[in-house]
Length: 310
Image 1 (cartoon, rainbow, N blue to C red):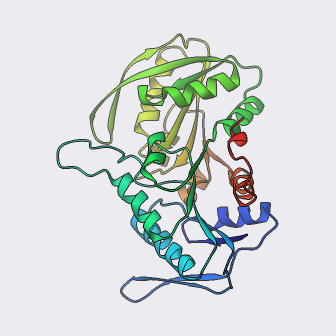
Image 2: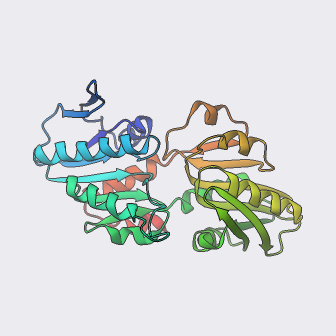
Image 3: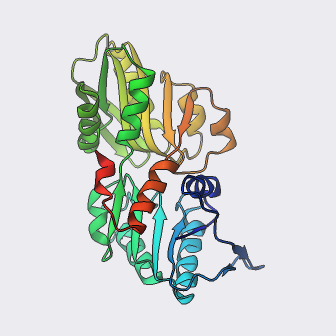
């Protein structure tokens, strides 16, 4: 079993390798003067089970090309099997035609990863579960819900909790977390006027006097979650905390969250933290390295991955 780290989130890859008691495979990923990417594997990987760790986060196109070229290098080096470990799957929000003459970019990226040489994909909290069907190779989609449930239980023991979905599309995710915590579920009814701008319309559920846990898969601009937290506070919530898997934090998102009514926002390290994120007073990270490591071990040993969801 070999682990190759690309450049998007090397600390996570190192933590995964450490959890497995391995060292990262020696490789170099560099750029020519015109910014073309060149990959060279410095160890013999013929016949090996190889895992490539790379989130396709900002800069999404550079990181995606690094992943594709690394997959091609491994395939041409006669690796027995190559698994693309993509903790954050970029382009996942383009999972359908949003209007006439628009692409389904998530399907295109799935085709590219397959064509580049991946034999299977390991990812986490896909924005839309149906993206698994865009691949013609096996896909293991891990969930952060068990990790979040343990963290919430430890941090908020004794509080009257309520799990809240920030929109109708996230109800399945929120319901799964609420079931783990044995608590109630509320929903924010939201109307989006245009891309990147959201308006909270109504809170469905009795949140007065309860500590609300907003749960989502991605925080990007932060507008949706900040508006949802404000609506919950106006409806009488005792406090609002947020748990989200992928911290994209584009633009002034970190500052927006810092100035909001959100007491604490917890994200995983699927995306490398920026300096602004590390300096934030109300945003914290929890690691998914042990979860990824265990999933990779089970894939390598051909044992069950689905039992990790229990």
